[in-house]
Length: 306
Image (cartoon, rainbow, N blue to C red; front, top):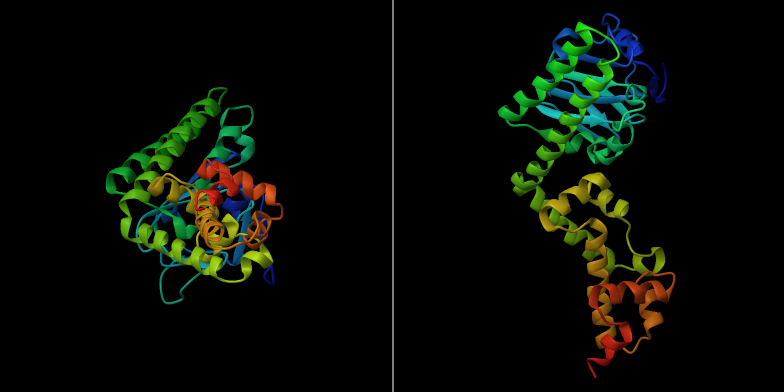
C-alpha cells in the first residue's frame, strides 16, 4: 500500500481485519464501537475507498478525517454518511491518542438486495455530502439514533434467519428518515453559518456574471457554484431548498433573468445577442427560460418598455 493510490476495502470482513477487530458476525452488516479501536494496525492505508455504506457517530476524536481537500476535526459529536466508492483518508496527530467514542455502522449494498431500500437509499442525498457538511446532533437526537444502532446490532447478534434482513432494513429506514429530518433542522437552526453561505452565494454569482466567463464558458453550473462555496452540490441544494424554497439551479436562473431584463430594457441588442452574451448555446433555450420565469417572451418584455 504505497503512493497516493487509495486502498479499496471490498468487504465487511476486510474492514474488520484492517482495523484489528474480530471477524464480523454477519458478512454484510456490522456495528463497530470506536472504543474498541485503540490504534490503527501497522498496515492500515492512509486513504481508502469502501465498497459499502458507512454511517458513523464520532466523539472525542483526535485524528482528522480528510475528504478530498477538506479536513474536518471531530472535536464534538457528529454523524457522517458515506456511500460506496467515496474516498476517505486519515491524518493522525502523533501527540494525541487515537482514541475516541461512538459507533460505526457499515453495510454492503448486497444486504439491501430485494428490498425497497435498494432503490430508495439513493434518495438520501446526505450520502453524497462531504464530512465538512456533517450532521451535528443534540443530546436527544444522539440518544434516538444510538438506540436504533443498538437494535440493529442486537438483531444480527441474537439470531440470523429469514427475518433478519427485513427487520434490520426497517430499522435502517427509520435511521435514515431521522437523519433526513435532523439535516432539515440543522439547515434552519445553524443560521449564522447557513446564511453566510447565502450571502457568499450572491457574491459568487455576481462575480461570475460581472466577468467575461458567461460568454466564454456559459452560465455557471451547480457544481461550479458549490465548488466556489466549498460545499458539495447536494448539500448546497438541500440548504437552499430549506432556507429559500429554491434549488441552486433556480438561484442561477433568477440571476440570469435579472441580467437579461436589464439588457433587454437598456440596450438595443437582439434577443439572440442577449442569449449568447448570457452563455446560452441556443437563443430558443434562453427565450423558453425567460418566458417560464416572467410569463412574457423576451420581445414582449422589451416592448413593455417602449
